[in-house]
Image (cartoon, rainbow, N blue to C red; front, side):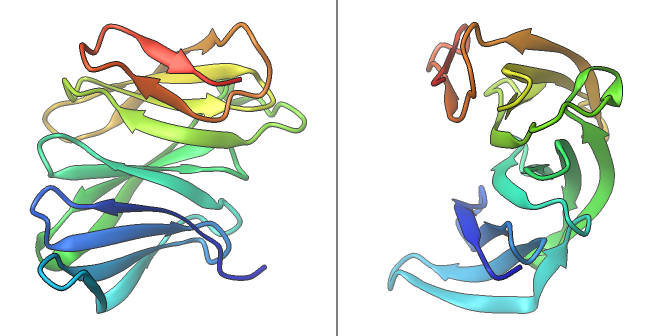
Length: 171
């Protein structure tokens, strides 16, 4: 119902900062001045996401050509093509739940891209799982391949260990 910036990520070039704003249903884009620590609104200053979706976290693919945000409210993930000038072009939205079936009280929390660039993950707080996606290396498209229970309840944050072999989830 109101602006609610939830996360900020610097793009791989270090030139832009992307802010997932859950309340505005937008990814705000800023030019980033690392020397002075300043953010200046880009032109255009944002990219819209699905109305009512609630973008929460944002992550870049290691190749810098693609980026993703999880939509907290609708339990989905949106994929973007990263274009010159800090522009984002949404091209796909996929579910985080098995067969896309709603789970009462579910919402997504964290989103991460594996360091290899082959996989992406988002946590489901009502389904108590982490959704697993493969990433097409040619076009950045996501394929939802399954969900893994976190063996606990309400997973919020999770991280991929530096070796890329393990995911540690905080329930």
